[in-house]
Amino acid sequence: MKFPNARVIGTDLSPTQKERPVSNVEWIAEDANDKDWGKKRYDYIHTRMMMGAFEDFREIIQRSYDYLQPGGWMESQEAYPTVLCDDGTLDKETNAFYLYSKKLDEAAMTAGKPIRIANKLKRWFQEVGFVDVHEEVFKIPINSWPKDPQFKLIGRFWADSLMAGLQGFALALFTRYWGWSVEEVEVYLVNVRRAMQDRSVHAYHKLLVCLLPPRLAGLIGYTANTIAAMSSGAASLLLRKCKQGRQHKQLHRSKLHNRTANGRRILTDRT
Image (cartoon, rainbow, N blue to C red):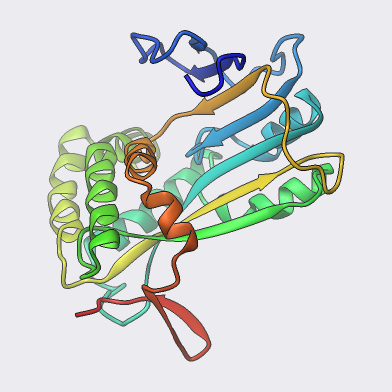
């Protein structure tokens, strides 16, 4: 155990974690929408893939700020759900996965639970009073279309995660707000799954990570006596696998697999 004096608390709506991975990690069933997060103040608060979970994620950021120790840290990891492509292989008029993502976004807005929050995190953090806000943007292939082994592996993990969550993302929103039946959703998803696996389309998502220390500008490090971690969602498999294989660190540092065209850095299908 690397940090035996730390205490890690993970929260989710249901007790999906049956066993403790290590003795100082505890999972509890709790709704982060609750205004009362207890009496403790934390050194580090982490959120991941919370898009669509809240009416206004700014309230969660504000609450996190209030529940952090002076000099504590907050980190948020969110995928930007719009399907992107840099080389023209994605037809936005006909691609079923692109149209699915657009329809999902529209339904989420109708529900009052927006999923396009990743690109706003940095500004929201600054607005509540966080300082030294640092943002990292990662490109994650939709499937294993890249030739580069690193991005190919990440694309496989991301495709597995998306495929596992595809029905869950759509079912409540499409049935409640578009009036579809469960059967209609299932039929619709057949072409969506097929489009996701099309390696001739060089599509990707963006993953945005914000990491910052609040209140005390320039402070480096923290004492990890208590850590609050709120992490859930379809991308947990990807991020866990990336960390296990050091892929996340390599992607963070590597510039070898991007090239510049017309002033833009783009992910390429290199041979």
